[in-house]
Length: 553
Image (cartoon, rainbow, N blue to C red; front, side, top):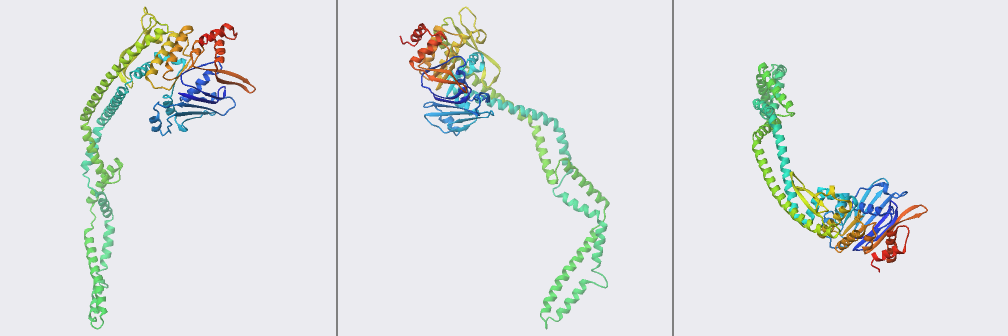
């Protein structure tokens, strides 16, 4: 339940601290006194949009804090799953708004996003304002109400799971169909690319070998001339290094008996001579092998041009990458040619998902229809107590053409306040007073099924008065046996039923007007209710009537 509310610098409120108790509490006050301001502050606690204009004139920041008793309301998992400290006794929710329009939210002193603030606060408090009376004509509200009363979360979870699976399968099928259509339109082009690569008969590393050969062929004359000159130096009449080294070795060998080191030197000279002989032979061989071959040059250049062209076309730099591309194209074309089989498999998957979805939807619809019967029965009994003896109502179910995340049900709430009038959509036929009684009765039924600590009614009594108002107050009083109920009202009959009575009022000060709220004593309640009965002119009759309403005489 809402245990304490603190408001600073919000609208007309400079500073307000108020404690609330369990049971049925009423809040009264003259029009403009600040009742809606308190409601707005609670709205900020629930994550509603913040407006810097609501900050009290001259201040830089407003601050709202609510302390809730949460023992027994199973918030531990939700808070701990979001890394928020959990206290089994209380939960502190705080909201700050700056003059720049920036907003911060905290739960148990941990900063939280508004989305989480809304989720947590929805487990703590439910505010029913006047505009929510229109929700009876909204399908989403009706379906949510049916699911709450049905109390079959696993049925709803099963449907949402199947719906997600069906959506996912449909999305995958659509994507595959679009890709298949695109791929098939490109098939001929891919086949042409593959044909070019296969006809090229590429060999790994051939580009490097061809480039080397091309370089040699294009410089054949220069190479041959250099080889000829180098080779000639080994066979001149004046100077032949091989013969000279051989003679030198023989001379040294002849003295090795008397000069041993000469043998070692001779061996070293022989090694050099053998290497030079090998070089001379290689020069002769290379000289004979290098020939300018125009046909071979043309072939090599043509082959390289083919490779370069393919590399440019496929945006690669090596033959190895071209071979990889060739394999990819081959696999891709095979996949395209087998796409019909994939489409058939995916279509069958969608069909299975759809069957599972409609089976879950059928179970969900049955659950809702059972809940609808319960609501209809209890609503009629409740409304008859609230002065509508001839009331008739029912939930009308139609099947949607396509499922959505709420099921396949199209739900309308039909209503007639009189036996001799045909039922119509409640939003088109019910008066303001009838809507108010309907919503109160519905909230009473919901409160029995939903474990909610606090319910706030903002002038739920619109369009009713007298005895009907008193009966509506009795309904709220019964609701307060299971949860905390706060009711903002302008009717004395409702104010008198409350266990606790708070009055909102304005004070004029030197620096301006400010709103305040007080918990009234018995005597103050008599005065407030008498004032509500008689207006500005307080009379003895009004005092006596107030005492009578309060059952003090």
